[in-house]
Length: 133
Image (cartoon, rainbow, N blue to C red; front, side, top):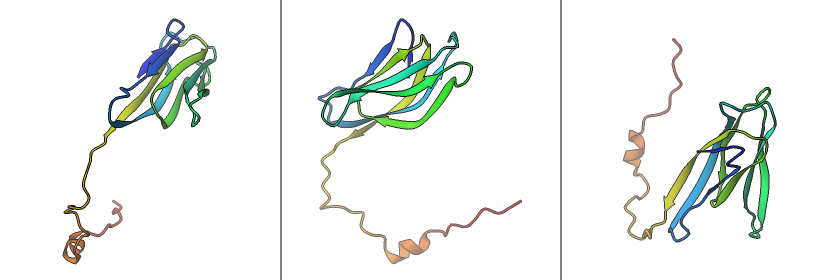
C-alpha cells in the first residue's frame, strides 16, 4: 500500500526490468484516512497504453461526507504504474497486492500428469448440497 497526501502527491510502483517474471499489481481499496478534510480527493492511475503513450485515468473521487472508501475489486495493472492525487489534500490510502509469476522453461514432453484413469475418476466424491439444520 501507499499513502498520498498534500506533500506526497504521487507514488510510483516499479519492478526490475531485468527480472524474468510477470508482474501484476491489483488495487483493492482506496480510502480517506485520519485527518482528511471534507473535500473531493481525486486519485489517478498513470500508466502506458498499447502505443506506449502515458495516460492518466481517474479511479476514485473520495469525499469524507459521502464516499470515504471505494472498493476496486482487485483492479489489475501492469507495472510500472504511478498513483497520483490529482485533486484534494488527502490523506488517501491505497491498498492492493502484487503477484509475481516466475517464468520457467518447463518441458511438456515428459509430463507425468496424464489424464486421470477411470479408477481415479471414480474415487472423487460427488458434490452434494449442504444440509439445512
